[in-house]
Image (cartoon, rainbow, N blue to C red; front, side, top):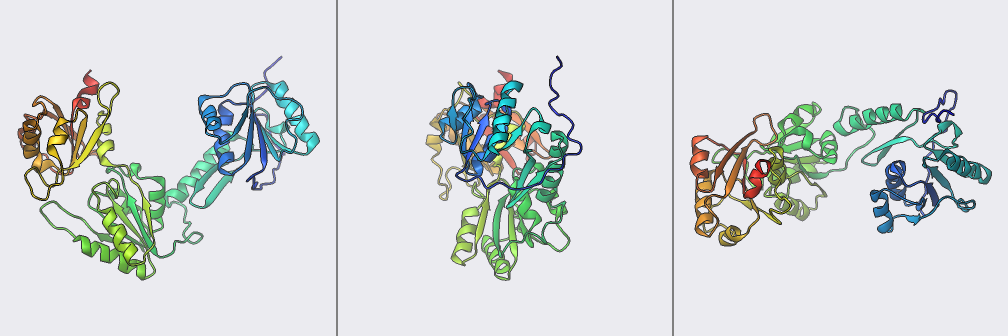
Length: 411
């Protein structure tokens, strides 16, 4: 006997698309494998009263049950399990069980989706994706074709390739968007979507520059760069720019490098807008403090090596009255130290750490322009890092990692 075709022909079947409002309604899922693992999150997000019937599950599905997100009945399917059910999904690897469930669903007039035989089902699960408040659902009868079309549409909405502004508009306000460490592909999906909808973009020097080229021609771009020991736009002027444009009815994206709240003055901009009565959306970004080390093979934590990592701003060094860092405590910690904005202060910082008890042989890595095409890594120790940075002519932006994790790949 030949095995059943998992994707039988559905030619001639025309589904009627509809969105089910399942909040509080009983939904039965039969089978706890990978298909259920993919489908359950959407049912949970819809607020359905989900009952899973399966003798076993994947660890991820069990975690959903342990968290109380679904009711797991640890047994096989039995007649009567579909009583008072609004919708059922059959996802076992036993055709006889799948047929039994779908037959009972048919008799009870319960719509039933089958993962093994679309032609025997009374409902098809579409390939879905979300962008903001929009749900995209594609039905073709071929799961791979549906997923490919879904991805194309959602990607177009997210990156602005599909002109959705005429259908989706933001009210006046400000979005503080973390652009990530430099690679334009490392901005969050939400950040990229909001950037595509902006009327005005106020951009930092460290924000991913390539993203500005994707903006529509009408978008006003304001340079808010702060160049170390060079030209800069004062923070007060940036705050006023955000507020003035928002009050003029514009949707303003403040595009920042890394994360807005990690040494990015995002808190100051949030407070300024709040005091002016301007609504603000905060979109976290991938901080360079963890992503740049990762890009060169350095995990900031590693099992059996470190249980903590500390991120320190080095824009003011030890001995400066403005410094808020307890360098003695930092030196005595056994974990990883990650320094941002510390290139020109690394000599004083390294000397202070050694003075306070950190070994002079502690490994150090300096990563310049991390995640970009210009990325480079220079290795040293606390004793040699100052001379190495000078000899290699390291310039900001650079992330400095101090600790044994620097040599993880060499262990």
